[in-house]
Amino acid sequence: MASPLPTRILTIFSPLDQQRVAARFTIALTTAVLAILLRGLLDPVLGHVAFYVTVYMAVAFDAVVCGFGPAVLSALGGFLGIFYWFVDPRHSFRIIHPSEIHGVLGCFLTCAVLIVLGAANRKTQLRLNQTIVALTNEAASRKRAEQELQEAHDLLEKRVEQRTEALSQALSRLESEVAVRQQAEDQLRHLSVRLMMMQDEERRHIARELHDSAGQTLAAIKMAVASLQFSGRKAPDFPQLLDDLNALADEALREIRTTSYLLHPPLLDEAGLACAARWFVEGFAKRSGIEVQCDMPDQMERPPRGCELVLFRVLQECLTNVHRHSGATGAHVTLTLENNWLKLEIGDNGGGISEERLRRLNSAAGNAGVGIAGMRERVRELGGTLDIRSSQTGTTVSVALPILRTADATQKEPQDLSSVASLSDS
Image (cartoon, rainbow, N blue to C red; front, top):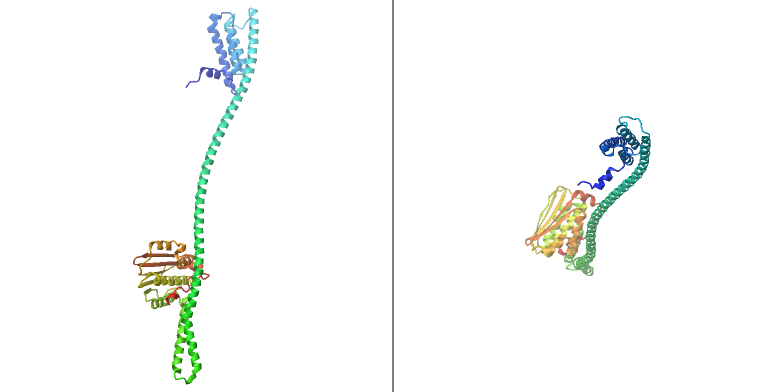
């Protein structure tokens, strides 16, 4: 769209920059030539008066637009051209009439006044233009600064939103971890309480077993010894009393040895896990009447002591649960070593576990029972896994322990949570 006429006129009369020397002097010469041509066009109208009127117009324009030097050049060029072509005698620079001197002086004085006034106006206009340019630049700079500030503000808000979202996610994860840790602490407290109760119950069970079995046997031995002391060798039933006394001593020794072996079988330290497991499975089958198939390698490199102890306690706990809760008539025990993983599997043909209880057992809930929780914690401490599967046809417990990690993790013997778990089967 074209600019409005007043704006275009103001643009034409706008002063040129001082550094544009060639342009200013070219415009001055051009306006001088135009002034001469215009005077030629007006000559039939003006005749022999107002010779320099077009020169004044050119000088005034050049003084405002081009400056002092170009205005002087325009005045001289225009004066010489008009004096040569239009002042009598034409085509000559001679002065015949004295009145022409007055015209020449008037032309020079008028041009001087126009040049001075135009140059002053030009300087004022240039300063005004510089001020306008400075204000325009400042406004543009301020606008750019505001735009950059707005962009920075938008970017900051976006980053704040992103950071807030990240913090919210971190807070959610932290709250989840706190909840998990709180649940673990609650489970640990519950397990500790159950463990102390189980220890007290085991102590009472051991005391009852010793009192009812070994204690009664020792009391019978004491009565037999007292009878021998009273009757002496002359009693007719002296040989029978000696045989009874020997049998009672053997029974007491067997019961004490059985209790000791159940607390911690010496075969586990001397012969290893496979031998101790076979001994325990055979004893369990005799005491419980449950047929147990045992599949273990005859020769196997012994794992670390802590690994053997954990697997033996898991075997004890699982077979005890089979006897107490499953109602099974048969079970199987399998021990294998594959790719530095020692795997133990205990299964039965009982009625299985309900889905709700199986879910609690696999999620390691606090009310899962101290036996299962103890097994899970001891296996997890050695970097292993414990899995419980159950259906209407039976239950299977699988344990896998890494031998390499177990060798480092079992520098200290793990805490025994079920040292006499199988005494109830005696």
